[in-house]
Amino acid sequence: MRTRLALLAIAIGVPLTPALGWAQSTQTRMARSSGPGLVLSDGEPISYLLEHSKLLDLTDAQKSSLMDIRRWLRQQTAPFMRQMDSVREYLGISLERRMQRDDVEALERFQSSTQPLADSIRMFNDAARGEARQLLDSAQVARLDSLVVEERRVAPGRRPPRGR
Image (cartoon, rainbow, N blue to C red; front, side):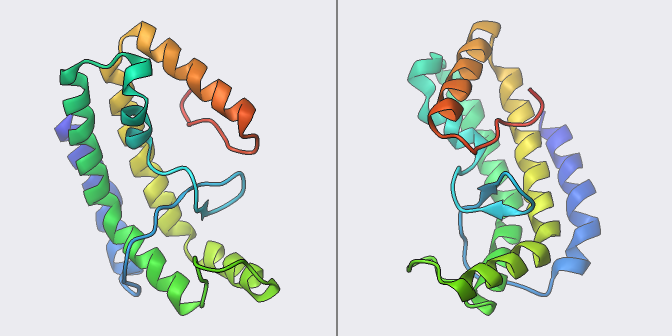
């Protein structure tokens, strides 16, 4: 598992690093939107599994493995998140106040200029999600799928995870 994740990190990180080194700063939690780019919301896929560990009836060994995957995921996506925060700050997008008309235009510029970063984060999230699903038995996968379907029904507009 670690080898595959490390190879993915090398395959994704090395080609993008020179092209994306122009932005830096603090971390913002981002997640997939129904359109291009990322929006503030969902969080990362491994935290979702850990938050629902009782419903999924995860063992201590599964939780420990998921925490390892989450640490790896956060380590891999942190540079992209910092770069996205720098762009957000440069464009003057505030997370503290209600969006105005100018903010909507800035958000559109943000999404188009950070698409490669969003794609990289999405690839790492998808890789981590795949590794996590391999840790679950068939009953846990069925419970997870039911949970996701129910939450999507209650919170429309959010896409289910890829690879399902």
